[in-house]
Image (tube, rainbow, N blue to C red; front, side):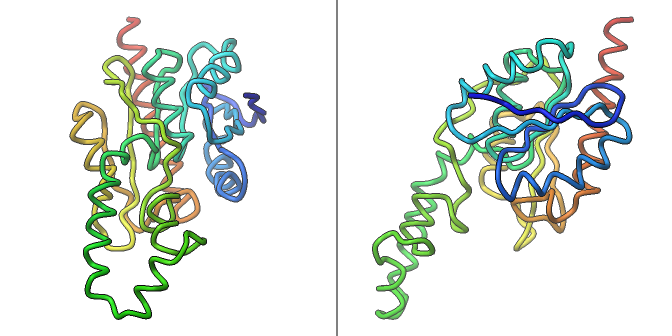
Amino acid sequence: MDMVFARRGSGPPLVVLCGTGPRARAWEPVIGLLAAEREVHAATVPAGDLDAAVTALAFAVAGLDRPHVAGWGFGGLVALEAAERGLVSSATAFAPTGFDSADRPSTLLTALRRCASVPGMLLERLVAPPVKGSLPYRAGFGGPLLAPDDGSAFTGDLADVPVTLAWGTLPDGGVPSPARSARARLPHVTHLRLPGCGRVPMADAPRMVAEVILTATAAAERQRVAVAG
């Protein structure tokens, strides 16, 4: 797996795992804000094999002296795995995949039970063959019903590297079930809610996202200096 890097700004090195496609472009205003205070290395990371992505990241950052890393979705999962392997100084992950697989069966079961009270014609549309937009499609392939999942569950404990996990709260202001799962599994890391944001907070509130990353990396820098001193 290849990673394509573009460098902007100056300061402590920060790798932003942008992914590919439209959601990668959602990072652009965030990167502009980050580059005022950090040397930002924007990397394309296609979703897929987690181990291959982390291995590619390790090679790509070999000369950067354990940079900070941030990512969303699969990129967030890669960031967490890089932190678990000690490749980075801190990790900030926005709605990372890897925490929702345990919730899929119960979520699907709840949805199907609710279908029992749906009028016949509407129910027929919901359970039609899995074309985009149908219930089976959304349940199995990560549409609005469920968060996208590359199939990899995060199994680390993140005991040694500062980590921040951040989740949007739209549409109902509540905490997504993967966020609850992450908090239960990793109570010692920083957990944040992003009010007014959906699953792609970079698009909803780029300044808030940038501030979360800058705050997390600054805290990690202070911690590293204190330990070194």
